[in-house]
Length: 298
Image 1 (cartoon, one colour):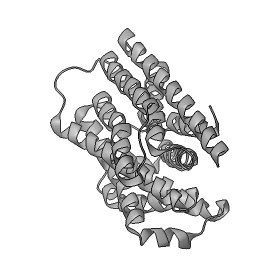
Image 2 (image 1 turned 180 degrees about the vertical axis):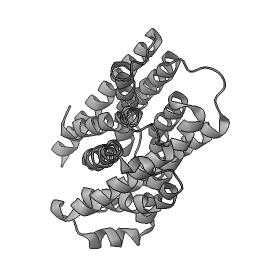
Image 3 (image 1 turned 135 degrees about the vertical axis):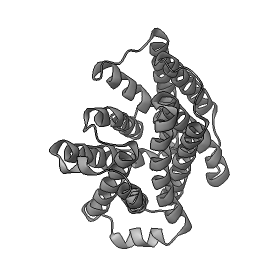
Image 4 (image 1 turned 30 degrees about the vertical axis):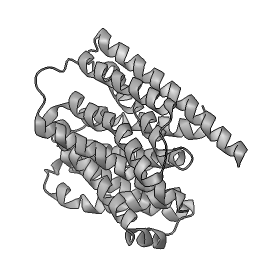
């Protein structure tokens, strides 16, 4: 499918391990505490690695003084807070569906407005398949009863923050800023903004070896490495298709829940996972074809 598509799918797979890692970690963790630690460790690591990948801290400071750079950092922080708070209230299935499932739609709309990207038929078809598949995954996971309204609104806020961050990052890349600089600026600022949230949570679990391992994995692997892969794809592909490819995340999370955590998945959930995979295949092939055509035209 091409290196950019593969990079985004690998990033989504790493994102999808977050829930399982938290479940296997210390029992004293809280969703907001884990989210804040993940963002802080990941953001600081991106800043520390920046000189090693050809970037400069002065470029990060320059981005923080721009409206897009400042807003991108705020959005990364808001995503973590809204997502983990939304999942805590609405449940993992519904909260993840609303947050992750709304991302491609909201990103596509923002990309039309801010980037002048036109959503093609491939994106519409792929996104439709993926969202339908995610809905079946929720049913297959046994979600029942009425969803918590505030939880749903928080999850929707997470989807909007993620969409806004993706579009803002794409604009910064189009303006000539390096991928590593864009990631370090957004997540470095988001990490600093998450400190008050972190200090309001119980942190005793961080004093254990198991807790430190969890913080290192979530920060360095599912954030630093994953978002460097994510921006590798975003530098080449349009914003809308990238967020559709990231819908691989809940499929990976579901598969790990079944295999590692012994969770059960009904037949309708398996059908949903299949639909998401078909949608990802459609989007991946379409995005790779468009990238090749752009390269030939250039």
